[in-house]
Image 1 (cartoon, rainbow, N blue to C red):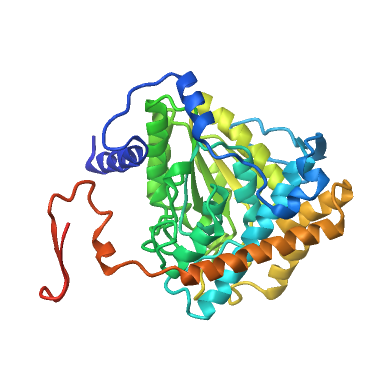
Image 2: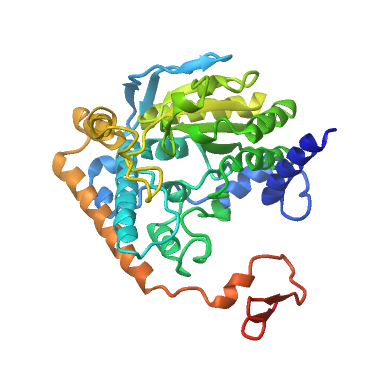
Length: 419
């Protein structure tokens, strides 16, 4: 074994340790895992008060819908473009995506007001990937992603307060105010971040999938990355191990067409990212259509559990620049951005479908929007009231058992902590 391949296996096994803990877990039967999941997994119900007042919000009558943009397959037969949804699911899609959009717009304002500092990468425009993905998953499934992770945390059952407080560096944040924008985390629902190094989450994703397979957990891991990370060598090394070991991992490329300020065609000789796994099958998906994402993820999950890895390329778009330091208009035109908003916006697609199927009225949608805005504003105020972490917290969450470890700051006389 070469030192390079040995190192890659080491990284993958570190990912497995995230799931398994410090000791290997016993092999439990699928029935035991299913019973435990039913007892502990949070319910995926609409939490909106306004939705509860809408009769259709509890209606599970099937609604047939044809996906507008067909899937493209690589080494695999694409799933059907005929899908079934319900009024309840569509209303949840609308509320969740609107809430995510409002969260990101508010984060922009808070950053400009200097209440959020440091790196900050916004997700507005890409919400359909998050909500559609979750509709095809359970909390037995793991997700690990890049630094554009605010809405992924919400999708995994997190709260707006946890995100906003983390962005502000407050203790009410999901990582106790010590992670910031790039390091959201929720072990309870198998969300493993939030990773700041481009592409580094892909071998860790293989490790999480290895942990699931080792423990007979009936779930898959989604390792998410952008088109900017799609040329990373570690991605292909991770795919190789996943293919060798038939790991239940779905590699999700969120192709928003710009890696920082570089268009995909300038960085990749072959920008058909769903084909880039070579021996790993792939699908290209309209990532601005929540129902298409749901269909693709459900299909990919069944494939991964039976056959091993698969790649999903989500054709999506971000409205903001790469980060808050990027105006987002120097390498693309404002006309391009407005054109996507008018023709492909994921929230407007669901709005039009809800109205066309006469599931809700325009007034009922307005009530959902009003509640989402109020929820975000209320949680912003709660986040502002949350304190900053105690300076001693700089030294915690480093070792499982610190055993009296001593830490010193630059000035040894001033900063000295024994754990």
